[in-house]
Length: 307
Image (cartoon, rainbow, N blue to C red; front, side):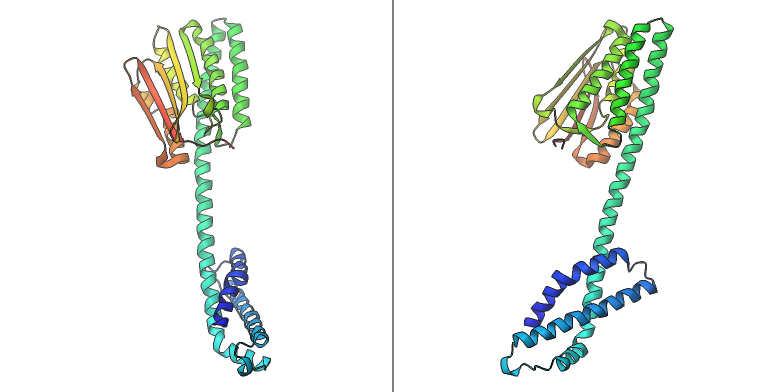
């Protein structure tokens, strides 16, 4: 029994980490003769080291007392003849398991990289859309000789672009930062619409540091402006509330107006849905519906504090 315990100790404490290290650098799949030869040599070396250690400890421990042979060379030769096939089998069994683990880890990492790349691509789609719309607003103000207002919008646009660049590649930011960015964006819109736009943003104190996707609110606000407030000559309202609902963060954005059919398939809303799906899977929900007084967009995502 001592030999079997020694084999188990050798496999899990000494042998397995070395095989995993070698598999990462000399993979067995796809099968190539040079790689197979390297692993065969490694298996023989490992077998010799293990059997030598086993023989030495057997002589030192003498598990069978006087019946234990003290002939090191004879014991090693006999052990080699009987145990070498098992040693090789153990090596390649561990190598196969290590290869499977390494393959799985690489697949997980690749999936994460692809997901991050898809999210970044969606962000890149949003940013030009937002930039062009704001530049068009500046152009309209300049044409109507509203130079002071145009300067305010340019300053606001500078702040928003700085925010975008500072958080480029960051999938999540604190809700407090995202809300500040939204306020700056809506201040720009208030310049455009003068007294026609009323803005309310209420972020509960206990969710200010909640982690939210970068630029998740701006496309919703832009959609509310474009398809809600700007379509009516009457005064418009955008009301944003964020609070914790059990183990989820809830963000409601209400705007006066009605849902335009084309707004549902627009870049902003489509990207919002896709980014939420990429980041949270089935744990998130995004709903856009008509109410008696306007349009309500609701985001529900798992609660987590930003690190």
